[in-house]
Each structure stands twice: as C-alpha cells, then as structure tokens.
Image (cartoon, rainbow, N blue to C red; front, side):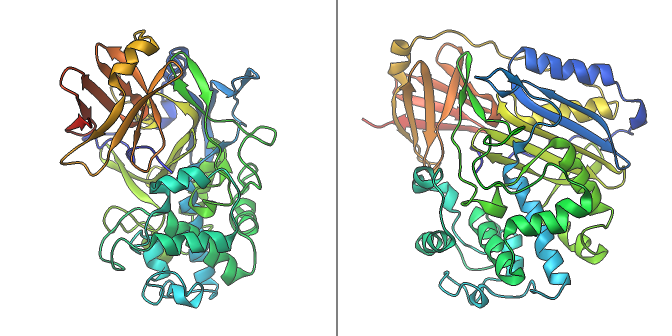
Length: 442
C-alpha cells in the first residue's frame, strides 16, 4: 500500500518561525504552478491555522481523459492516513467500554496466528507480528476484486506471523484490517457507519467517507494515475473491501486538516488517550507518526494506494495543519510539502531543479531487461519494457515506471529511486538512501 519507501518530512535544523499569518501566498502559488507546468504532480493542498483553512488550491486533473480539472472540492484516496482514523475509533470504543487495548485477538478471531497473545494495542503500534499481506505478489493479483471478511481472515491465517508479539515494530496493513473488523464486532456497526457517526459528523467533515466501490465512481472523486513518459496513465483500482481502515478512506485536503485540528482540540478522544496516541514507540504511536520540521514537531501520517499518495500533519503548538493529496506524482509529496511549509513559515527556499527526461526508444530500452539480484538486499528487481516505457518491479511490490535522464540512468522520482545500468557488465546500481549493486541473472 506504499511504494518502495515510507516517506516522512525532512528533519531540518532550527530557526525561529515567522508570523504565519503573513506568509508569501504568491510564492506558494508560484511553487504549485511551477510543479503543475512541469507535470510533476497533480493534487490538492490545504493549510489550516487556528481552526480555519487559510490556503487551498488544486493542480492538475481529477480525470485526465475527460480533461476534468481538479479543484479544492476534489476527493482523493488517502491510503494509510486512514490508520489515524482507525486509531481514533479504537480509542473512542475503549472510552465507551466496548473494548480494551489489552484485549487479545482470540476474543474476536481465535483462528488468527498468536491470537491468544496479540493485543489491540500491539495492532495499533504495528507490533503484532502479523505478516503484512500487501507486501506479497498475491495481493497484487487479488486487490481489485471485492473480498468478504471470512476470505480476508483466511488469507491472514495463511500469511502467518513474522515475529512474536511486541518483539519489534514492523509496519503491517494486516493489523489495521483486523482492527477494522474488531471495531465492527465491538460496536455492532460497519466501519463506514462508525466513521460517519463518530468522526465525520462531530468534526463537520463533508467529504470524508468509506466508499462502497473503487475511487472515481462518484462525482468529485479523482481517478489516479502514474506518469509514463509524456503521459499520465490510469493506475490500478484497489477494492475498498480489502484495506478498509488500513487504507480505503476518501477525503479532501481541507477535511484532513480539519480532522487533525478536531483531534488535537480534544473533540474526539480524551486528553489522556491523545497523549498515549502521540507517544512514539519505535517512531510510531497509535496510528500516527511524529514528523519534525525545523525545531517544531507535527503529528500525522502519509499514505499511498494505487496512484494516490498523501500526507497530512498537525503542529499542536502552532495550531496549524497541512495536507497534500495527490492522484499522480512524479515529485515526491515529501519534497512538495517541505516547499509549502518553508514558504508558509518564512524559511529560505528555492524551487527544485527538475531533471529533464531524455528520449529513449523501446528497442534501446530492451538491453536493460532482466531479473536482477543482490547479495545485500533481500529483494529481486525485475526490469522490463511495457509499451514505450521501462519499468521495474521489486519482489512483492507493484511495478513503477523509470524515467531516463542521462545515458543508462533512470529515476522514479516519487520514491527518490535512481537506477544506473551497466549493460556491459550485466549490473545495475540502485540509489535510494544508499547505493546497492544488483547483478542480472543469466
């Protein structure tokens, strides 16, 4: 439910914030126009201050084929930001006495592995050990068709566990799907009903809901895309019955900033539970990350599903929230949000210089095709040509397009991936937070 890496905002070093009320709106408009003109992202940005949205703008298309421009009311799949909503619902039911964070899974679904020792709290913190089902190839094969709860639970039983409960933290969409089922069992209501009654209505969220079908079926819902060469091509469509509270919610940038403000203003959970929610254990709380920017701290989450990618965070001390939702990204949301926050808080910021793509025909691309393995990275990378585009696919993950920018050098900018091929040696170098050598299988 995310590409090769899970992106957080950059950790920058300090300086004093300027008065946010006097931010350079023209410069922020120019940044978004620059990104749009270079076709590096399509999406919607919103900034909230003291409970009021002070900036919102959309760029690109909600529907490329229909030439439907996005606007501030366009709704997007938010992917794993759904987990923050699920965590809030869990804490609410705990406060109502309908469940306890100490409850073990055998009280709900005893066939799951380690059900007698995995707790709800461990699900919240990604410490259950349940294998992350979205990492595997069969997820890609099944994700577009609806699945019933019983079939999903059987799937999770087959996947097993990666470690003993509370032994470590490992991100698991499986755990949050199970949490969604527990919420339904404990409340007697569907996840969609809980979301509407307990969060959307109290916070006044007009455009946040759990869809019955894939995103893009309803008015104002964006379709999602990936960039291939000079074109935006339609992405996959995960059926919402599969990720549920791990990644199926639809929302707008404005609604997300309002949701986080509502949460931190104490309108959704108690102060004690909010403190527990934001206490980081191995860099994760209850459905939330701590995200630093200069000498300030925000709390939020990122998300990625199909061609949608998203990030939303809230600075409690400043009572400021920001969200960017994208339905097609080449430039990473991480980089775009660093730019937006730098401008908003009056920090020095220069627009990025985008590497210009070069033309390479399909026949020339075929010299790179093959399966590449590494002695140090536990993933194989399949490289292949599809149409006019070179693509790469790591074990258990979706394929992503590679954009050529120099001889034998390609990039997948949303995940900060660069690949340099050495066709004469049958090797490639993958650069993403380091350099890793892969060798083509003969």
